[in-house]
Length: 189
Image (tube, rainbow, N blue to C red; front, side, top):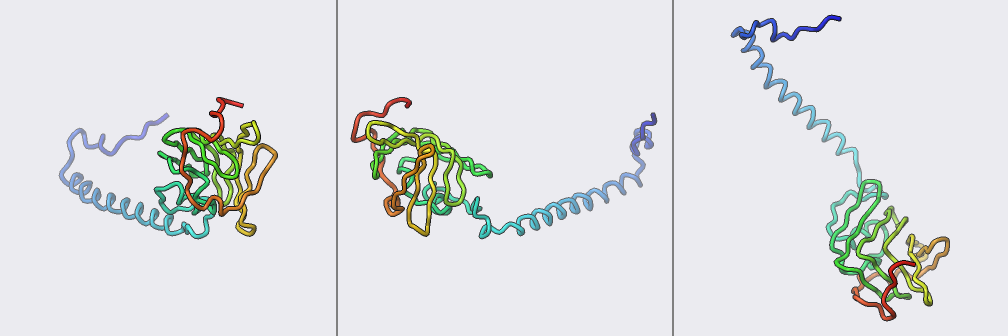
């Protein structure tokens, strides 16, 4: 096995002046070349991305979750007005933190937990946790939502069951109440 020698090892610990001048004159060219190559590659890769055609994940930066819902083809009022923070990953997984758990009365009484999770794609919210709707005396977990622009309806999924409601009902961002109009929310069902 042969070990390759470094060119610096041939200098014997001291750099001849000519080698030092050549190395220092090449250094800026190499640094500039690398920098220009990086900028050109970055520019090309960014210019290839067109947010108009990416319906799964709009690239515009949005600070308000309600505006983000609208960009994804969903009504702004699907979430209450007390959103503290949210995060959205590249694959659509999201987490929302409310200031506190709360209730909103739509067609049904709806409970929003302090943390809501799910997956967001254009017109669809799936794998939802943290939202429940009261039907008679039962609290049922909302597992998904789908907006249909053609019919003007939003379909809510509770397991394998679903219910359609007019999207107009969710145009305005609802206020959040600490307690529902009915009995306090049970811990888990």
